[in-house]
Amino acid sequence: MTERDKTMEAGTVLRVEVPMRWGDMDAYGHVNNVNLIRLMEEARIAGFGVPGGTGAPGMRPKVDIFSAVPAGVQILVVEHRVRYSRPLEYRNVPVNVDLWIASVKPASFDICYEFRDPVEDTLCVRATTTLAFFDTASSRVQRLSEAERAGLAPFQGRPVFGR
Image (cartoon, rainbow, N blue to C red):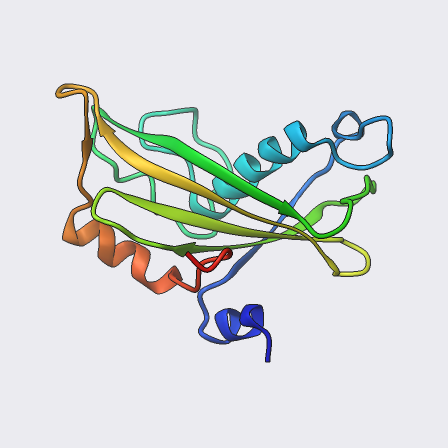
């Protein structure tokens, strides 16, 4: 059993489909690395929602973990880490992205991604985004509350990169 199978068996993985755009492709015929970061953002929003107070109402995420963030608190990207297994080629169908939470720390957590070819379901990219809650009034990183940690727990799995 693979690590992905163990994580999926635990019920922690959300699968979202993210549309690929013709403009995501580079001269080599695969999704450009810069555009992959954008696809990570789209997957994160489709899976876990938009931060409270941003954007207008639209499609509901699979699991809404961000909308309850208090006013004055921003969810900031601290780091992206990406590893390519094979090129993610442009197709005119959405790419399958598996998402879960890992490495929950006092003031940050990781969202893990696996991008899979939408036709062959082969793994193309593994990635993580580290997020932190930032209090704009104090200009400091804010520790996750017990309620926030509890909200992340059902979707927590193994880190992609084995930190």
